[in-house]
Image (cartoon, rainbow over all chains, first blue to last red; front, side, top):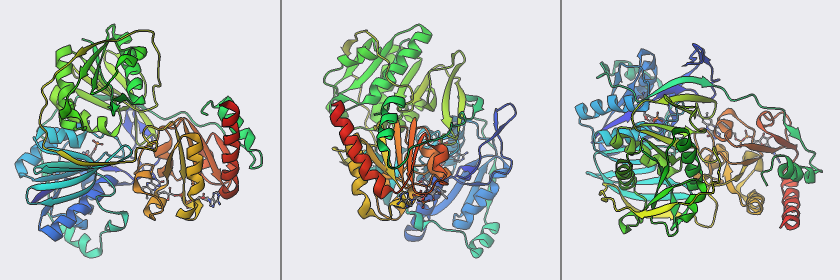
Length: 248
Length: 320
Ligand SMILES: Cc1cc2nc3c(=O)[nH]c(=O)nc-3n(C[C@H](O)[C@H](O)[C@H](O)COP(=O)(O)OP(=O)(O)OC[C@H]3O[C@@H](n4cnc5c(N)ncnc54)[C@H](O)[C@@H]3O)c2cc1C
Ligand SMILES: Nc1ncnc2c1ncn2[C@@H]1O[C@H](COP(=O)(O)O)[C@@H](O)[C@H]1O
């Protein structure tokens, strides 16, 4: 089985979010970038397929040279080859279109992407990609088993979960549950050394267009002071929630 | 030309989100000088949609659609959009709608904006306000394609009533087969889900152990709320993963979010900040949650929560 794991390169979850160029661009100054958490769960599940079922695992990112340390980290965790499509990621459609070419050229059976990226929160790329390459698609995936060309997956739904059966080729949008937090791997020294020698292939984009554009970013209005209520005066809290906030 | 809206249902009745997306579609239709057409799948009585501005309902009744299937449902919507010549398709951000939207986007060659929280700021260029960076910012996005898909976040636009009535006609699309078969659905039906809830009661590591969740559930019961938890609580196995909210868990956009024994780490706040009113109960006045909350009680959850339950019961009895 040939597996491709899509890696988006996102600001660390503690990052302060700021913008530059008249609030049209994300300010990367002083921001630490990481593998998108949903993709890290997917990559770790892919490692399981590699170790237990002899799958090959490549990782891919659509982005500029600045994303290479993130791809190297994925190699250090155990991926075989990294591919960087040398184009600035502009919207979900353009990224999916670029990834579709990688998937077709590489003849991948299983594509593991994340449910959503924590920067743009589009939840677009995996579904669009599946549709473009005519693969089956399961998102919010919290469990995945593959046997030959058959796959069983569990999808989280509002208020529960759903078990599905499907076949390869398959694209999934993964999240926590695919593996647990405790299964995540911190690259060790040997992994990091090996990653330096592993191939990181830069491929030129096919120049996919976008369907959406950013006009500007805006930060939420600063929050007013909290209204404190004494613990022995909870009638007041009920009163405030009813008469002032009007939520009960 | 009409605005097409997908009005989701469950067991033959509309979800609340259906009325919210209908209200949104009506606002877009008014801006663009057109009407609203809804697609309803296996719904017994669609008349209520008129109240939220829908002019016409396309009624789909088909056993092949009894269980939600993203591919088949996307195809139904795609056929409806083509029949109606719709240039804008509106849907919710439920797990199901988020699943089908990217498929629909490719099949209609339509640009898609997710997590939209307000009516378009302009219809030419078509510009919407969406959240990004997990609620740490807003992004004004243009959709540049001929057909546009707008995913409206739950509880962001609200319900807007209109005094119209909707006509209804049968719609019999071709049902596309899907390579994904639903084998079984495991769903708690007697509890409010985090996605649908107007009130969410959430607790963190401050509760010390899973045996102390009785009072959280009771508080949720009194309020008709969903229960949620912080990430360590689900990592420790005190509560199911499905209750984990925050940046890497489920997003919360309720009207009221009550946080008990939760410190208010940036990753937690990012995922719940879209909630309109936040209440924190915490022993530590320095807990970061107090900076994000509207109302706060500095106190011990084990004393405050049981009392709050009693007060709320009394309030409900008085207001019943
Ligand atoms: C990559 C990444 C992603 C993450 N994603 C998420 C996420 O999605 N969601 C999330 O929640 N976290 C997330 N976290 C974890 C986050 O950083 C915090 O560690 C976590 O939110 C803390 O949970 P907590 O508030 O329950 O526990 P703690 O931080 O331990 O806080 C417990 C609080 O309870 C209070 N307390 C103690 N006793 C009582 C009492 N008797 N009565 C009242 N209050 C009491 C304490 O004062 C304290 O403020 C993430 C972390 C990382 C690194
Ligand atoms: N620039 C990118 N390069 C590679 N994969 C990506 C990129 N952007 C998004 N993805 C994948 O698509 C998933 C969902 O992203 P999004 O649609 O942006 O929310 C991510 O978790 C990644 O797996």
